[in-house]
Every structure is written in C-alpha cells, then in structure tokens.
Image 1 (tube, rainbow, N blue to C red):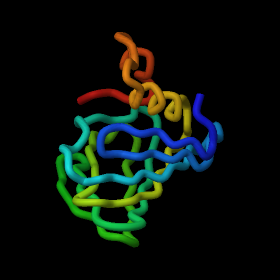
Image 2: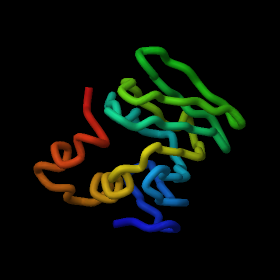
Image 3: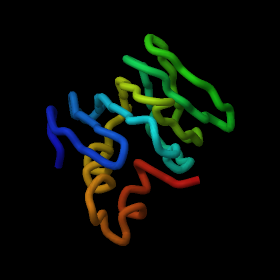
Length: 129
C-alpha cells in the first residue's frame, strides 16, 4: 500500500502521493505529454478535482474535448466517462473523493504485473468504458 511521499512511475507519468485519507486522496502527477491519453473510464462513486500547476492538460470529459492551462481547475463527477493527459509536459494536483482503494489501484496499475483479475478487483475505483 502506498503512503504519502511515495512516487509511482509508469510510461510517461510520475505520480506522487501527497495525502492518503479515507475521505480524500491527494496526488501530484507529472506528464511527459508524449503518449496517448489513457483509456476512457469512469469512477462509479468517486469524484475527482484537478488543478493544472504547469503546462497544459488535454481532457475528454463526457465526450467534450478541452485543453486546460496552468492555474485552471476542473471537476469530474462520479460516473462520468473521461480521459486526460499532458498536452506536452504538464504537472497537476489531483484529488479523489472518497479515496477508497485508489492509491492501491495506481500502485498495482503502475507495476510490471498487476494481475489477471486486476480490473475486476478494483471495479469500485475504475471501470473501462
């Protein structure tokens, strides 16, 4: 289980855990901004809030594409299909409410072998659309 201060890395993304509490997971993500967006997905019972700290972030939220610039924030309500990533190098502040097992989800997702039932195990946190 990750703890505050841990950094998880995947291709093109560094994710630093800031605070892990039952009602709130706070992270900071740094994107290289060179790869494709992650797959379209939603979180059944969690809402997310993002604040762009540096660079630009490309999103598709509920089928609506948009670019957010440094200083801008946006929300993704629970159950809303979305994708997002850096439009070039970018850094964001990321909040997930409630946290559920999201920190553990990212630890497993960013590992070399998350397991064959990975998505089923985390169906309360992450659902592919």
